[in-house]
Image 1: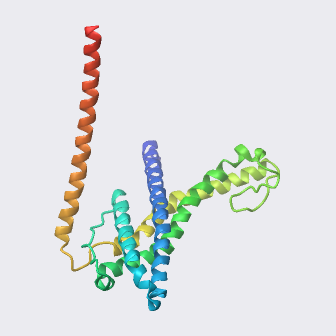
Image 2: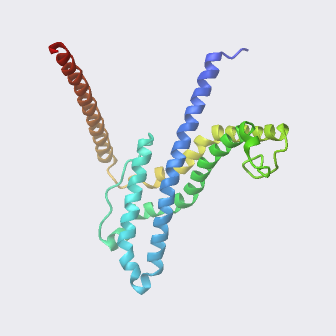
Image 3: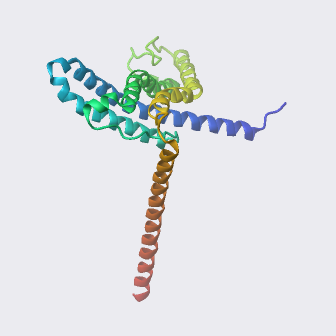
Length: 248
């Protein structure tokens, strides 16, 4: 049975697009994961120094940083097409905020994102770099120092074309990993946010969905208004130039 060429091409394009989107999501998650690690260290410092009284001074700022980072992560994932219905804003008072379910859920997300999310983000960044480096190795290996390794994992030294081509095979393997596992890694990185950064079971989801829909509609309207303004500016500018040429 012959597989249509168009079907193969469509599958390849779809796979490449999914891998590219997954890489972008993983790298974006890497940025928030580093921030999550910093907030986690700040919260740990506040907890350790709480008996001495210093933690009470650090805790409000640490909680504000936690809420701001969680809000940024919701916005980032929503921009990637992952629907996250935000919960109600947490209380501002320290005692109430510590007992608030939203704060606890955000703390759970913070720990997971600062560890697993950071690891997946690093893999999402390094695997494509390794794939490009090893796949293109035969193009530049003669320009590298004599002790340069043939692969990105530091095994072997290129003494001839067979060694360089062997590095290319490893690059093909890295590429296959990126294409095959990238989307799953992106979903795994986003899973804690999809589970813990959403509105809790006691929240009126219909109201939150309506608010989210209204916010998105307002953003689309603003975008359309800006496009119309640009079109008018281009049209008026071209018309004015034509009038000037006609007068001259």
